Image (cartoon, rainbow, N blue to C red):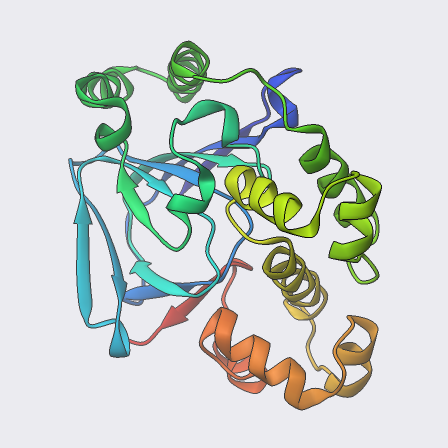
Length: 272
């Protein structure tokens, strides 16, 4: 297995968390569940011209895209094939995809779209260039150059969105949508619309997913978990409140998650 990451230089690093490269030979299970996420991302299949993901009851519905896909923010879980032999990707920071794509991020929530639907034929040309580039470093350069060249907006957020992202990062458990709107000197309705346009989730859902992801990071590698104090420490009223969010964002109860979890925090192996 080969896994490499690259953090771009400023100012791109304020919007792109990392680029990643993956090559592997096999997997011991069929599918992975992917958790709800505040991040948008690009995935590039370097071994073919198709990407698949699964949803519906028992993940029985198969969805397909051409070789570069844009994954919006997710307020729910879905599944992917566990084995991807050769992949490249971009993980944007929360709200970080905003400068690079024309549609508002709210329109991409809970969805996967072909980059060709946004960029047209140039997405297919980019895919060919990425496949043919001889090294991961060269692939990273090509992808970054394409993002910068095609960006329809400046590398900036609306001041209210920038303020909210900063406040929510500093104090996600105590942040208030109403107070943040007041600090930005906007009505709640306008603030929520601006935030969802640039980030993809409403502020309330963004904070719920943030809380869930923080809890996941706390328990992911723990041998045993006493759920009551962990729930309280992460802002849940009680364990039923935690269980409801856990089911919505992961598809599992907390106990099921601990039994099934794998080597990657955002992925849960599913039996064949």
